[in-house]
Length: 250
Image (cartoon, rainbow, N blue to C red):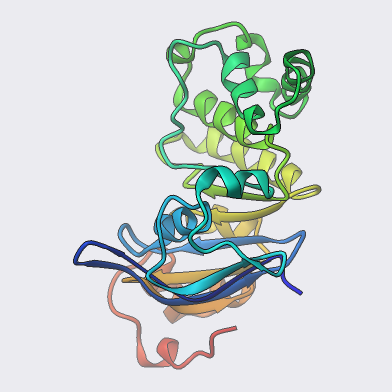
């Protein structure tokens, strides 16, 4: 049984239809990447899973139990952690304090959270020397590492990562994705990413969204191996060609 099952998911923001019948599974231990242009529905999918957006139709099953409509606090306690786009690090707190906030749902003692935050610097050595620096002093790449470390402090079984490479220099993007490769050893990851090459480089499976619908799906080499799909969705422009549209959803 899949750890996460999305079944016929629909989400609206007022009159705007954000998701239209999205369905896919994430097996435990996998990294699954959602690709697509801005406004395709990728971030909304994560927001629905984490309880920040309420589905109007369909269901979300986590470990076989429906979580559709539950609040974010309840979902975090069940083992799902969401690292949203934009990092959202508190500028007036130190790096270590920001990371410790990620464990607040667990009601652990402050001393325990402090030890665990210190251990995070083993996974994120690039920010170790900034442990006592305020959040506003960090670069974009450093802030992204803080945000991911904070998400991991919840000890999630499923980590939702929204655009971790957004706005980062290529060398920092590579560092962030090396960390994602490490995370996958212990945590299932659902990744939203516009950088298709990097997103698929760590994925077991990828899906392409367009205007709130999944239009393509497959293993990374299958998506990259089809020239028409690559041109239309993975860095190119234009409508999906007939031969790409006819590809079965995997």
